[in-house]
Amino acid sequence: MKNVPDLEISGLSLWRVPLTSHETYYMASGKACATVDSMVVRIETKQGVSGWGEVCPIPHYLPAYANGVAPALEELAPVLIGRSPIGAEAAMAACNKHLIGHVYAKSAIDIALWDLTGKACGLPIYTLLGGLQTDELPLYHSITCIAPDDMVRIAKDAIAAGMTQIQVKLGADDDWQADVSRLRLVREAVGPGPIVYGDWNCGATRMDATRVGRAVADLDIMLEQPCQTLEECAAVRAATGLPMKLDENAHDTASLLKAYELGCMDAVALKLSKFGGITELRKARDLCLYAGARMCVEDTWGSDIATAAALHVAAATPRQGIMNVCDLSGYVAPRIDPAAPSRTGGFISPPSGPGLGVSPDPDVLGDPILDLVA
Image 1 (cartoon, rainbow, N blue to C red):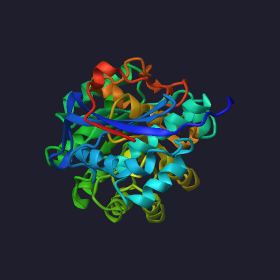
Image 2 (image 1 turned 60 degrees about the horizontal axis):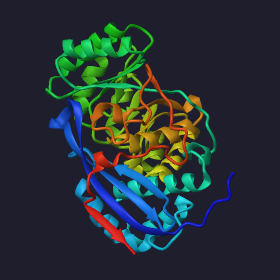
Image 3 (image 1 turned 120 degrees about the vertical axis):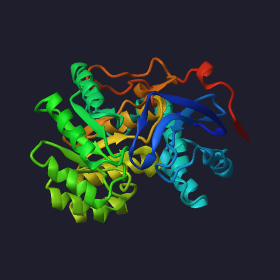
Image 4 (image 1 turned 135 degrees about the vertical axis):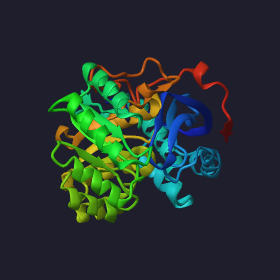
């Protein structure tokens, strides 16, 4: 390892980058994802080394707000400027002491601090997290909730391209029988072997989710976050006998422990912005390994910075713990770093350069909306 240089944070900058999905994602309860603002953070040092972070909240999805990132940075700038960025946990402990909550905004800061630490050491983040355990990470392909026949076409195309895991969005038309058709037809179209799971994004009632689950109980299907509470999800799992993946309700160690006790955490989505970045996500990862839950390591939305951060955490995780990851940047335009990793068939590998291993394109970023300096 190289001698780690002394670095001192001298400023923070923030960009707003609208990301447009290649196709609109329709979800239950009227939620949709078309063009969403991603907030890109750069932490600069006096020595000229910079670290990058990103957070991209989806409106109406979780308690996170893109316009909340700028005031959070303004509040935390005095805590960060003048201190060393090396060792993200120490810096984030100071941030958490000063500002309670707002984990989504802190996530971008935490990622940038890990990027800086890796660059200072000359090592990729996965090495700092314990070393590379899984180089080729399995992806899932998410299908927007549209007509069942159209979802079948997308699923077939994804399988032909090498994908082995399909997420079927459910509930957009509030028709449980249509959701049954979506799951049955997609399962039949992809054949045995690939993982297929139906995701309501908290938008189903316990009764409707149970009806759907029982109607497809003869198939190899997983259900994802049908209802708004862990108790409801546990009841659906018990009533249907189908394995359950959690997402929105899994947001800290307490929720993970509760889900484990309720017996409804067969798999779980660990998202950077829900937990507050790499530092806290690593703790959640270790708890899930202990609990035996398979993990999807990703973020709510985003481009190449958020994708790279999640890939580093997943790559440093034992293979048996990883169900899948998501190439978020592959679903949106523009790419913040067009040279960053892309899917190869149904897999993707983490960047191998120092830190995150991504270099944002200044022309894509444009002018910052906020500059905070000493």
